[in-house]
Image (cartoon, rainbow, N blue to C red; front, side, top):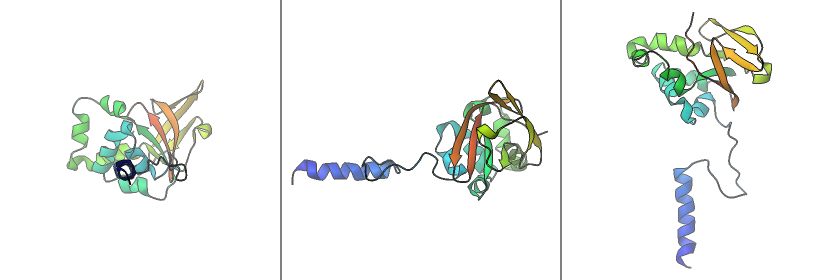
Length: 169
């Protein structure tokens, strides 16, 4: 047995621990990108770190881990950065948990709505408000936000990425 015989399996084991879900062997294909619930899929996406932190602060992670299905119009990090200076920090305070939850629920609809199914409507959201959806020349708008990416699948729904945090009425 030479050093390679020992080192290569050790490296493969270390890689498996450091990068779970990343498999290089053909007999063990990597899981599909859509594996996991909405909270898991959002947590794995670097564009949603602010959203995930806000979901935690509002105690809504369990909601997005629930049975669903749900459609999430997910503001990316750049969308949160557009908020007025200090607004996000203020919303993340424990005393503003209900307000933050209402804002986040304004981005979640019951049911799984894929991009091909989106049409002009006022979509009911989990906070009880309705948000205007507009389709024009193949571009989708959500409450004034632009939909940047669609159909990020999860086991309990779908995520569409938006460029603006949409405030409730």
